[in-house]
Length: 471
Image (cartoon, rainbow, N blue to C red; front, side):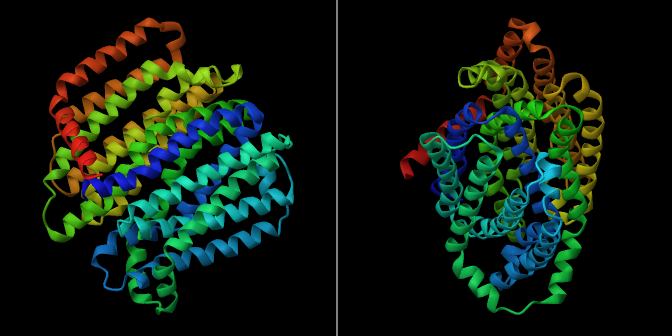
């Protein structure tokens, strides 16, 4: 991709993160900490729904896109099976009244179940239609589809405050579902040519079976990954309280600023590396990219450790612990992004079972870590467990990729990722006691970073200047 195309893809994640940082403090002041925690359970459910009902066919779509002669037909094969299965499941859930809402929110209201069901369907549709924009490198449309719903959510919350609406769970869920539905409408409009053409195509059952053979192992892997990213919230729901879950949810959302790197890189990287593989060239750049992303990961941890105290300026007093918890929370987006640079061998070799194994082992570690830490440390324990689990996830993906594909230099990857994760763990659990010692630790990391990655810093500076010139 050209610098201009990458910049177009970056508008959405960057703008969305900025809007989230604006809307999140507003939500914490307007709604109760318990209801903020309940919203975390909605996000867990949506993530589970997308991972389960996609049947791994979203990954098959990405993998087959550049080799497919009829891309609308490929979209139909990838999207239709899961959509049919999801609609049937949603209808069954609605027949049980408010049972789903009761389990998620401890509020057994049927209208909440309806809202959750609607959010499940529109989130699934949005997932596949977003891939159409992403794979066709329509960066600006992709970015606007991410940015506008954030604006809508902020507008709805602002409207609640202006008219003095009730500060209850229904209004909070309604605002979020409205923004999710809006993004679906945008995706439907922006991809209308593709999905209209897809409707007219016939379903190639033979090719669908081949896609399922690639995608089906990813169902278990997807469930394991969902567990890896969501089991912390489930344990907080079961072993702590909605207040701790709310504190953790706010920490995760502030740490989502690091997801800018994950969103932009993942959007650009997968199509690029598979295009290289299809053409049989460019794969030598993988090592350079992994080193560059490592530099960004180390920088992200260090800056989070040094400036996390600033979030307390915008939050109610009951969220003071967020400043310690969020440093471990940035581990998920940063380490996942780093693992995306080293895992390419699994995708190229089409040995998706190894991706499932990596996620399953990391999930098991997170399961044990949350069981051990959450009763004693609450949100801090959940954050530490997830951060450590993602470091193990990154290590396993890297080693499996090397086993299936080719060797790559990884000493620097392991060393710097380990010292930053170790610092994040200590900071989250004992940062309030260690105080200045932790400031010194992060400054040493930052100084080492500026020396070790001076070449990457120089190339990044030149790239930004080039991007500015093309804009």
